[in-house]
Amino acid sequence: MPIRKTLSCLRCLAATAAVVLLAGAAYVYLGLYPIGADVPHNAATYWLLETVRERAVARAARDISVPGDLEASARLLSGGADYNDMCAGCHLRPGENQSDFSLGLYPAPPDLTEAHDTHGDPASRDRRRFWIIKHGIKASGMPAWGPGHDDERIWSMVAFLDRLPDLTPQQYQIITARSTGSQH
Image 1 (cartoon, rainbow, N blue to C red):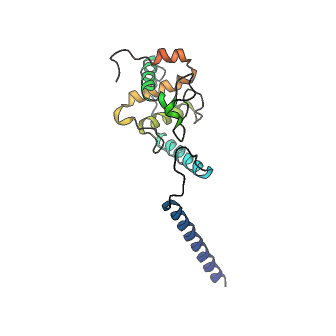
Image 2 (cartoon, rainbow, N blue to C red):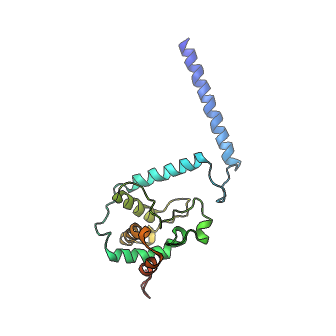
Image 3 (tube, rainbow, N blue to C red):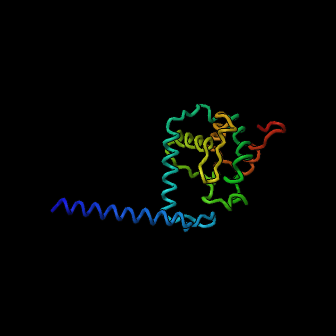
C-alpha cells in the first residue's frame, strides 16, 4: 500500500508541475506580462530581478582588487569629469532630483548623489561599483563601459562616486569641469 500511495503522490506532483509549466508558458507566449517601462513589475518579479542582480554582482565582484590610491585628487578630477559626461544624465548631479532621461527609465537608476549604497564594507562597495561600471547590467539601461574604458579610468569613476554624495552643486561644477581638449 505505501508504494501505491507514493506513486500516486508522485503522479499528482508531476501533473501539478506540468500544469504550472504549461500555464507559465502560456503566460509568456500570449504576451500577458505588462512589459512597458511605465508599469512597475509585480512584487514577485521585482524581488526575483533584484535578488538575481545583487547576488550575481556580489559573486562576480568578490575577487576584484581595489587600488590603494582611490583617495588621490587626480582620480577624483578624472572620475568627476567622466561621471559628468557619461553618468549624470541618468544618475543625476548634486541639487537635481530628476532629469528628462531618468524620468522614463524603469527600473529607475539610483540617484548616486545620495549616500544610499549599503552594500557591505567600503572595499566591497568599491568592487561592486567597479564591476557594474565595467560590465553594465542587462535590461536596465546601465551600459558596459569596459569595452571603451580601461580599468584605471573606471577606478577613477569609482573614486569620484565615493565623494559624490558630499559635494555641493558648486563643488561638483568645479570638480567635473574638463579643461579644453582633455576629453578622453
